[in-house]
Length: 75
Image 1: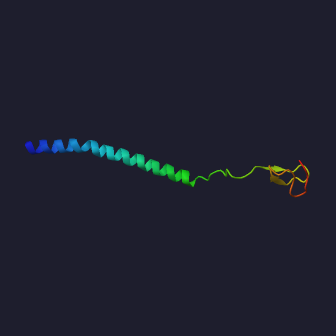
Image 2: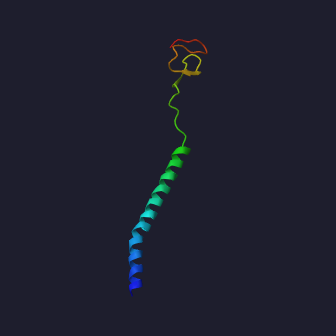
Image 3: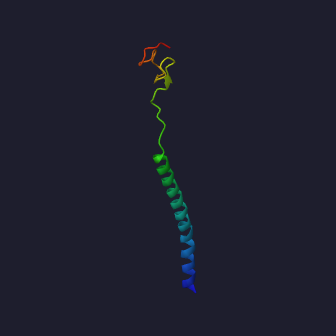
C-alpha cells in the first residue's frame, strides 16, 4: 500500500512538468515555423528609387533625374 502511494506521489509531482514540456515544445515549434516562413518571404526592396515614364519617349527613368537619360527631355 505504501509503495503505491509513493508511485502516485511521484506521478503527480512529475505530471505538471511533462505537461509544461509539451506546451513549451509546441510554442517553440510554432516559433521556428513562423521564423522559417518570414525567412522565405521575399522582402520588398526599400533602397530602390521610384521610376517614372518620360512624357516624350515613354521609357522609365529614376524619379530624381531632372531630365530623361534616354532622350534628354526636361520635366
